[in-house]
Length: 226
Image (cartoon, rainbow, N blue to C red; front, side, top):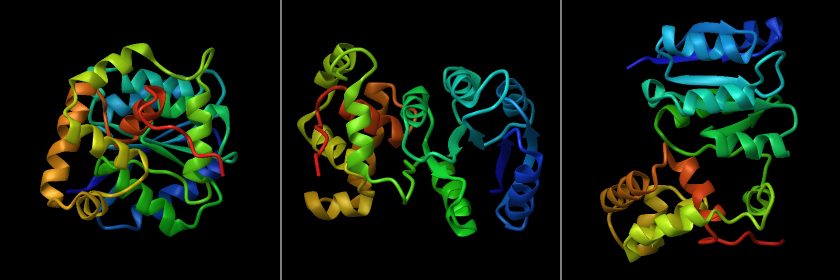
């Protein structure tokens, strides 16, 4: 199946470069280009995009607002958003993850990293920039907007998880793949996938990136200070 990619960036030259790169791959195609967030939301609907490469800083409706609008629209539940940013670890990136982005990538990343990011996001996996450590992301997530970072509602929802689902959630928050989690917990990858899907359903998470956010905001996982 061909991955339908939407490019959202106010720099036309950058969009052109991304289009050439994406269209060169046999399993993906660019279905639209947007220069601001509002246009990105509109095209995501019209062009049935699978993955949106979204710049954060755009005129008018920025990437953060657009990400939130897409992720909260039931008709766009299948759309995955990869944030493209010059600043790989900042508050905007964390807000984007909370808003529903599947992850982020620096604009200076290698072409292969960008193409891999599209495939990872399309597959429902969480994408964290190779240049950003999980520990640093965790510290940002744990800070919260106006309190200690814990979301009482999400903490209560964790009670719906089984012991094994919580164990799997902790591993997901650590950035481990299904195969790695299976090896750590001595179960099959299929069993891990089942637990992940059930946790997502119970917690209302769009994908694994949202599970990571929930794990930290609920206090289930604490950030490491390195």
